[in-house]
Structure formats: structure tokens, C-alpha cells
Amino acid sequence: MHLSLPPRFYRYSCFLSSQRFPLLAMIGVAAPLLLGVGCQRNSSAQSAAQSLTSPAPAAPTTAAPTTAASGFDADRTFADLKKQVAFGPRVPLTKGHTACRDWILGELRKSAGETAKRQDFTVGLGGGRRLPMSNLVAQFNPGAKKQVLLCAHWDTRPTADMEIDADKKKRPIPGANDGASGVAVLLEMARQFAAKPPPVGVQIVLFDGEDYGPGEDRMYLGAKHYAKRRALPKPDYAILLDMIGDKDLGIWREQNSEANAADINDKIWNAAAALGVTAFQPGVKFTISDDHLPLQAAGWKAIDLIDFDYGPWHTLDDTPAQCSPASLKAVGDVLAKVVYDEK
Ligand code: 1BN
Ligand code: ZN
Image (cartoon, rainbow, N blue to C red; front, side, top):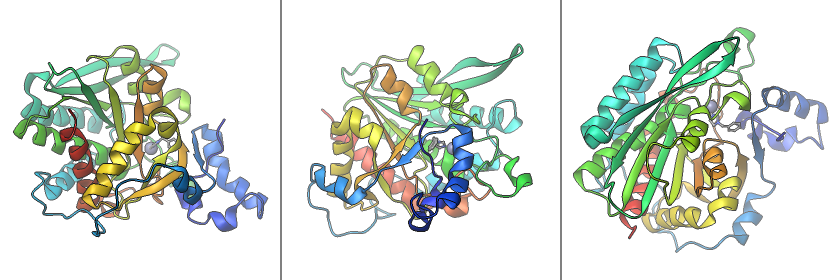
């Protein structure tokens, strides 16, 4: 089992370190340990940074411009984030789940036409009960030899287990960053791909059941299903977006991604440096279990782009107010550069 600390504890990790205050640290880790979910903070982001390949020198800007002629509409993307949140929790067997699923598929259809499809499946809960779930897939340039998979999860956590208050803990999270952000960016990218076809095949897959939980035996369910029963050809590599909408965006290389596909991380960080998107930080910080792991287990190259320094993680405060159009655009612009630079 991984040692886990939620982001709100990392923020204070200097005084919650297990060496200095073992009791406090134990309280901090108790919830995620009980949940059995996996994240580990890597010891020194800075020293890890020094051992990584240096990207091209960064341009002097501090953030992605919100009005660049890149074709990525930051405001429309943020509106799509808010639209998902407005459906309510996207938890299997709820109205919000069904309504949001149909809306996302409709948006994908506008860009990707009939290639946009639902991959329905069920997951057993024991006692004969089964949860209905749907991965959502779409394709651009399907005949191309090289295929890139861009993915995110569209479901949301049924319980706000990082809340302190017992009543709040039982309620579902809004999932603005943890759920809606990655979907919003990929819907906008789908519009870009429709307007300007990519030089390689692009597969968009939005996974269900990433956050069902509470433990990892019931997480990453859509990705696990997709890795076994993929609806599209095996991709050359996969890029997962998760929690990339934080208004205070900082994305570090994630260790499982670095171990599996450092060259894909290099593509991303080099593109960010070339665009002057400084939200992409130099080094490895966390080791995170997420939807990329079932893909890696299937023998695919897969990385996770995730900003895990997110205080409202798995709380009722994971709302659009914590997110920003500029953060979504920063990630979208970097991804677009990677895709359009492919040969
Ligand atoms: C990401 C967003 N995850 C859940 N919601 C996966 C995860 C699990 C990340 C445990 C860190 C720890
Ligand atoms: Zn989550």
C-alpha cells in the first residue's frame, strides 16, 4: 500500500512530517490509508529536477496568454467545465451522471461525428448488484499510422472523504477540477481537431468510474475496462489529464509516468517551455495511482498530467471558483503543440 497524504496536508508538510510530529502525521494519513488510494510525495522535487533532461530555455512569459491565436477558446472551455458541474454529481446511477454523459457525447458528436460513441459496461458490486458505466470515445484522422490517445475521467467522487466534518464527508463532490477540467479541455481540443485535422490519429477517451471508490479496488474502472476491451487501435502513447484546472496551476512530472514514458513527459515539458507555459514545473513531485496505470499495465506508454497540489481535493470546495480559464488553456495549448508537432 502506498503512503498517502492529501494535498491540504502537503501544504503544511513541513510541520506534519512523520519524523517531527508522528501523531499529527498519522491523523493526516489515516483517511487515505483507510481508503487504500495511492499517492506518494517524492522526496525532493528540486533534486529530481536536476537529474531530468533540461528542456529548451523557457520563453519569458509566466502563463499561457488567454487570447492567443491558438484556436483554444479559454472562455468556452471554462463554460464547459461549469456546465458539467451544473449537472450535479456525475456518480453512476444518478440523474447527473446520465445527463452529463449524454451532453458530453453530443458535444463530441459535433466535432467527431459518428466516431463519437459510448462504450457501455457494468461493474459488479457483489450481491448481484451491478453499476452501469460508460466510457466515451471519439476519433480524428483514424487512418493515420501513428495514434495518440488523449484521455480524462468524466465521473466524480461519490463522497467528499477529505472533508473533516462527518456530514460533509458523506456528500458527493462537485468535481470541477477533479472530473470536469480534463473533459472540458478535451472537448475544446476536439473542436480544434475538427477545424484543423491533426497530422496523426487522435483518439479521445473519457473514462467513467475513475473515482467511484472508496478504495482502489473500485477506482480506475473505466480505464481498467478500456485497457481490456479497447474500442480503438492500440495507441502509440496515451496522455491522461486529471485535475488540470486549478487556478493556481502547477504540474510536476509524475513518477509512474516518468518511469514508464519519460520521452512522452519530455515532449510535454519541451512544448511547455517552447510556449513559455511555466505552470509545467521542472521535476518529479508525486507518485500517483490514476487511470494511466491500467493502460501501462496493458503494455501501453501512458503519462498522467495532474496538479496534485490542490487543497480542495475530494472536498465540497472543488468548485469552478477554484479553477480558471487560463489554466485550462495553458494545458490545451501545450497538448495542441505536442499533437500538431507530431509526424
Ligand atoms: C485523481 C483524482 N485520483 C482521484 N481523484 C487518483 C488518486 C488517488 C490520486 C489517490 C491521488 C491519490
Ligand atoms: Zn478524485
